[in-house]
Amino acid sequence: MNKTYPRLIIAGIRGGGGKTTVSLAVIAALRSKKNLRVVPFKKGPDYIDAGWLSSFADSPCYNLDPFLICKENILKSFVSHFIGDIAVIEGNRGLYDGMDIEGSFSTAELAKLLISPVILVIDCTKITRTTAAIVKGCIEFDKDINIKGVILNQISGIRHESIIRESIERYCSIPVIGAIPRFTGKAFPERHMGLTPYQEHPDSERASLFIHHIADRYIDIDRIFSIASDVKTLEISFENNDLDIEKPKHPIRIGIIRDSAFQFYYPENLEELIKRGVQIIDINAISDPRLPEIDALYIGGGFPETNAIHLARNESFKQSLKKAAENGLPIYAECGGLMFLGKEIIVDDKKFPMVGIFPIIFEMKRKPQAHGYTIVEIDQSNPFYPQNTVLHGHEFHYSAIKEVSEDIYTAFRMLRGEGLIHKRDGICWKNTLATYTHIHALGSKAWIDGLIDIAEKYKLREVK
Image (cartoon, rainbow, N blue to C red; front, side):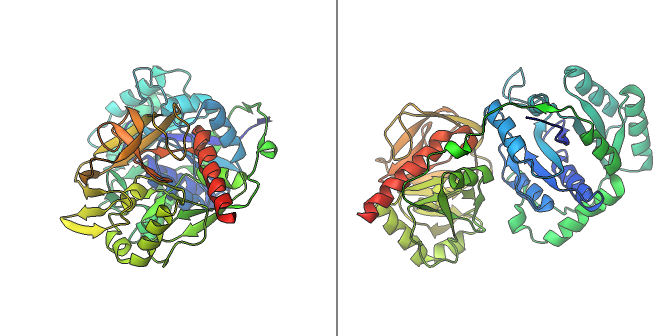
């Protein structure tokens, strides 16, 4: 399959340098000025930035993380989800930052895989000519990376911009295609080392106006479009096996809790379930009085702590969920979902009762308790995974265990990452499994197989 696929990667020299703001502005400008359908992608284990990208593109944002997903599946995903005119891919951390000295799984490695041009975003706070040295170093560090332009961020004035722009264009021979001034105030408030999710933003209209202002005044969208269009053809050869997918013999209904507390789902996870013939049932743990008739439940991550009072008040839903778990309903929960299934969440010394399936009290801390990629080995029997399965995932949470019963049962051994307790994770009870580790379906077929298999078994039990 050979196609051009106009595309570009927006990368930085560090995290927090303005990549997301620039990515949103580029998406906004491509849509408003060029009238293009933009397909957003995100490199890195991230839900919040992806949510903002999706909102501005009016299209799902898909993940292209080489640690979570093998190269072949990244290419398949990129091609199959390219339903539009142009792809904007936001990197993570610095361009060359990976897991080791080789830069494994970095944004740069993704750029080489996709043969994509790179736009480099530089935070210019308190530097001028040195910016050119940074850009030149990035260009020279790996000649296979095609850095085609620079966007300056946090510019303090005309003179500041002029010195930096002329230095880069003289010493680096690449254009400066945008210069964004330093703004007072924050259109995008932050939480937990990142942006507030767009679903919870206090003034999304103000944020949208801010991004469109940047897009209109400070970015050369014609140059960006030209860079994204002047790309090499992707020569991709793979078989589409979707028609050969074995679907359950009986219709399966899997509930997904999606509300202001639980928002963190990779769209690919849900798409893969749908491909397998699953009917997705949306559930709101804050407003629904009880669980609907379903064959399994998937609870993703999110911020149950910021919605703790509302979750705690919905007593009928919690009791319905606990009763379903006692009756053997298959339940798979990640991070925020894990916390919801515990006994209590303590926020600022206030206790909020949760579902109570697991005898764990969680307490919110001011600093991250775990942050990064995980590798888990399934070393004990459990409802969802075969033993000896190895999963690549990620964890990011500010919660910690305040109290826990000594007789909890865990099925995961952490080869990388912190997990739930004592380098273990995957707490189980009956057909419920909960973990701090987030899984991407394109990197773990075992997750899809396990969830559908146990849901079908539960369905057949109900039918009988």
